[in-house]
Image 1 (cartoon, one colour):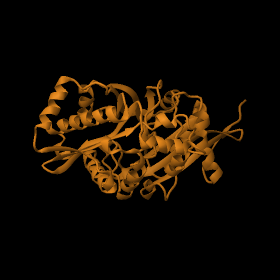
Image 2 (cartoon, one colour):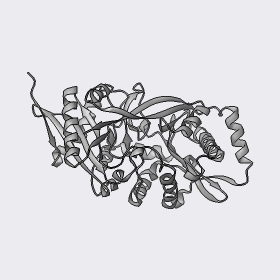
Image 3 (cartoon, rainbow, N blue to C red):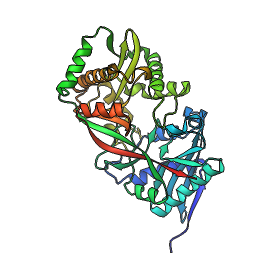
Image 4 (cartoon, rainbow, N blue to C red):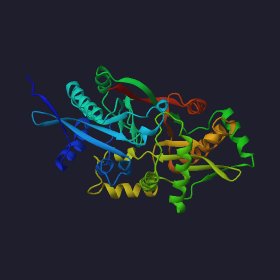
Length: 384
């Protein structure tokens, strides 16, 4: 008979280290898994470093069998999410779980029970996950697209987890898609004509971001984001502290040629952020920049060349989203960044996402530029 499974809260530095390191052991043999930088993982989990903790609380758990760490999970509450409308996915009495890793189904079941018990003790009646730890970080469980690595800031997990989570009573509530596209060739004729029409419109100006005014530009762009995404399922507003934090985190891997701001009549109304796929460099670094990986990374960032670009964020202010101009601005920004991605960075493919399954505007844009779904992530819910 195997040893019993015990699940205990993370309460010490050795526990926290074990929590972080487990992912590297369980996923190390998966050729599609990209080891995240350990410093980034610790920062994500640390109050005082991650401003999410200004409005959120979290409890980490470890599962052990025979004294050996065999699983982990986070249970957490975002107090801003509790204030969102129920019909948008979050709302009162809803907590989250995430950062799930388990050696087998029995371990997974014990971990989910511990997270649910913690949320229940906090007075919550619904669990939504995996969300690790904010919807702006890595939401959803990968259920298709295991054959190739994720792009920068996207998650990857064992294909076994889906069956374990669903067998435990968690029901799919929302799918998130990423779209793959060839960016070496111009977009189809109808899209090109829409772009050319926009270029003749004197009201429209599509400009590059100005990195010399980085924080000002970050505040502008993320302010548009808060407005543009405010009706989306799962939306939780970014605070001023989080906007400053995101700007600081992204500063080293964003490039003016890969960010566009769309102005109409001199007002900034839309944006698109594209990131070079840093995972192409991180894949062989084992989750650390020491002793010499930091030099390799810095040298690469001076003039990065990569196969793939990822579009993690784009948006148009809410009041314009139902207009024809909104899709025109989107196509123009995508095309201008496509040109620079291929000519200046050597990229051959792009990835859009994640995109909510029912975001009709973005799904239509993805279809019109001949992109195809290459990964699907699912968020689950369960009554407590």
